[in-house]
Image 1 (cartoon, rainbow, N blue to C red):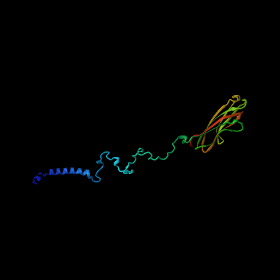
Image 2 (cartoon, one colour):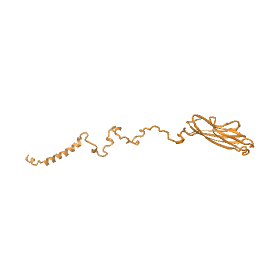
Image 3 (cartoon, rainbow, N blue to C red):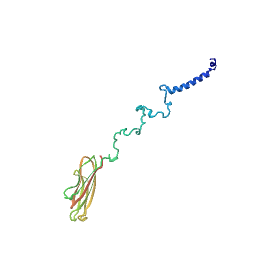
Length: 225
């Protein structure tokens, strides 16, 4: 006992306590960590994997606002937004459906007393309100002996009413012989129309004897008004 007391110095006691704390502390840290004793500093980088995260543990409240992109969601999970407004197309207005109608015919010999309807598209139901472009062409001929002046005029009609400028055509005496025809072409843009309409061409004989044949008309809706 005296031998032990002689060797029991302060340095020996402190070193013994230190060894005990190291050995005991290591065992303590490995088996009995106190609650809330591990923080972010104790975790290695990438130590927490997806398999270690509890299902439904990460909620929207834990996700930083504005941090997710469309590529983070499965296909079909992000709903489409509301339909946008029509783009600005300048002075031409909003682009709409294009729709067309066609007709062909002729008047034959004109009577010279009033305008005669030579061709019509028939009743056309426009799919939308808009301006309509009218384009027509026709052949004409004198039908007498060519000893007098022959002339006439044509214009477009909308629902039987003449619209647009009148196109004059004809010849002085003996310019053409019978059977040598001339041609006319015309075009006109209507105002905004909607609903059902009839587009056509009417012609009138001014002098001599004029025949109008092979008359065609095209009506094309250019867009919404």
